[in-house]
Image 1 (cartoon, rainbow, N blue to C red):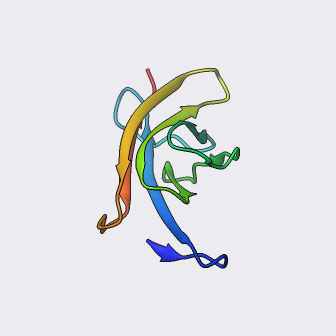
Image 2: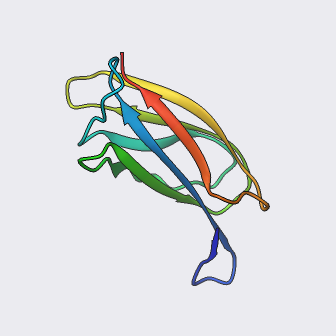
Image 3: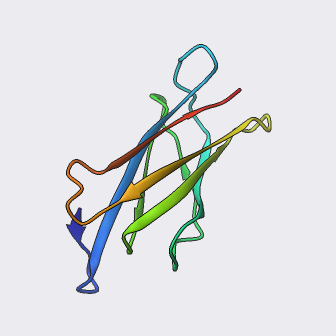
Length: 95
């Protein structure tokens, strides 16, 4: 968690997108699908290692959704809290 430029808090959600074999999947669009608002209407793309990072401004339970270019998708719930160190983390497995 880190302070943002607006004087409020920014909470980080990190994670990894894996395929059915447990290998990282690059280039997957990961976004917040549900949670306490407002949350950013922006997607992060996974890197070569399948990892992603998103920022939210409110504590709570969020649903993170990853969608690959071939249409495969996965969702996971993650809880963000003020005492959350390290950042909240989610693992998405594409089927």
